[in-house]
Amino acid sequence: MRRLRRLAHLVLFCPFSKGLQGRLPGLRVKYVFLVWLGVFAGSWLAYVHYSSYAELCRGHICQVVICDQYRKGIISGSICQDLCNLRQVEWRTCLSSVPGQQVYSGLWQGKEVTIKCGIEESLDSKAGADTAPRRELVLFDKPTRGTSIKEFQEMTLSFLKANLGDLPSLPALVGQVLLMADFNKDHRVSLAEAKSVWALLQRNEFLLLLSLQEKEHASRLLGYCGDLYITEGVPHSSWPGAALPPLLRPLLPPALHRALQQWLGPAWPWRAKIAIGLLEFVEELFHGAYGTFYMCETTLANVGYTAKYDFRMADLQQVAPEAAVRRFLRGRHCEHSADCTYGRDCRAPCDTLLRQCKGDLVQPNLAKVCELLRDYLLPGAPAGLRTELGKQLRTCTTLSGLASQVEAHHSLVLSHLKTLLWKQISNTKYA
Image 1 (tube, rainbow, N blue to C red):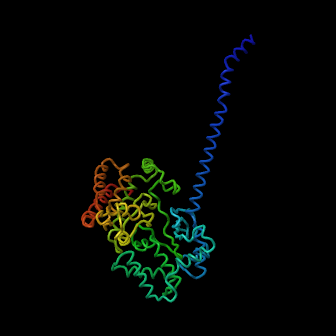
Image 2 (image 1 turned 135 degrees about the vertical axis):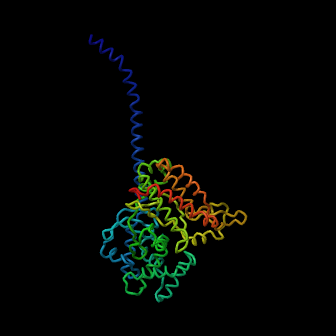
């Protein structure tokens, strides 16, 4: 009986066992391949992350070069002592998105700050031992020894006219530059102080910070050393993708972006408050004391806010003076309107007969901001508000950049939008 059972067992299970044994080598190969593929993909991502971090995050080079110039007496500034001698400026998280503009969160005098420093191409990692002298000669070369204070005032005024336009308010801005240069309040501007503020003025964002210092929606300037400067702490980002490494941000699908915005972003009333601040910022850029400015990269990545949900412009690097944009477009050869693009989205029409760019932009700031707000405000908006809000945002996005229309409709459309949003959150804890 036992023999019969054993025979039956062999008859029933031996063919199955042979088939399984036949498949095992194939299964092992597949598992080994998948494990190898996972290790390869993980190693590649780690390499890409490390390479991009090493290229983007070079704050230590900034500090070494700046402090070298400071100790040589070439530059000066209000935070040089804390940065170079006392080591009281703490560098924390790297926030750089391009190698030439180093951005870090930091701590100074017990306050959260943002540290910003430009790295010239001569400071490339392959530049070698002559890096610092080249920066000294190229960046901190003006004004030269023997320049009088009057000559420095004149060269500063000429620079501001070239970049902001010939405005009656510019002499007052020159006065602010000289006051800032005299950080130790000894009623004189040394050559090192003059070299430092001149280098700072070459940084587009610093020029914008200086022009918008009286506006509440731009970060406040706290101090500088050479062309390194610090501002108020990094605002919270309205863009969920800000937490991703820069190389992976373009891979975020729009649908996933919208879903993340609803799940991870502020509650709708807070978003409405942030949007009101953004609209006020658009007002500030339009015919301000120092001319008109254009937002040339209108994305949620630049929409920041404080702990109290007050809007702060996260990055002024892509905000450009009207004079600079017009100078770029003037006489520029073009085949299509895409050839007439300053920055990312400041686009002018192309005159196909003359093959030259026209002077007026296709979209004003407000139209681009309203396009942004459609995705930012309509999801999750109160049911009774959604239809009217959608209608007003659609009207707003049709504004053209023609000067004749901007003057007539810009302020009216902006005022209606602000009023609509403010009525929804006034008399609540979100106001």
